Length: 81
Image 1 (cartoon, rainbow, N blue to C red):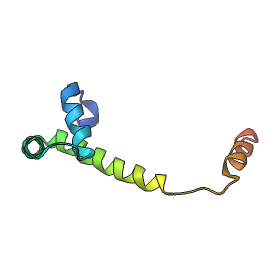
Image 2 (image 1 turned 180 degrees about the vertical axis):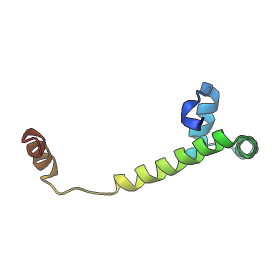
Image 3 (image 1 turned 135 degrees about the vertical axis):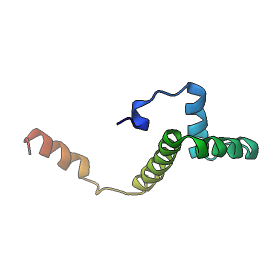
């Protein structure tokens, strides 16, 4: 079974995905790219996965660990736990 992760896309398409996810396309480009997404299932899946991934990363940035988290993590790693 082939999925969107198995495909390589032209750098221009990758730029459109990134700009779409960042919401930095002008209105004509956005409408045009969305029309492409309607007809390309794999590209649509990749684009929406990227958009969801960005949303999750933005949420993780808001999470703050306790002050000594890094020290405890390093100790745990060095102890092999």
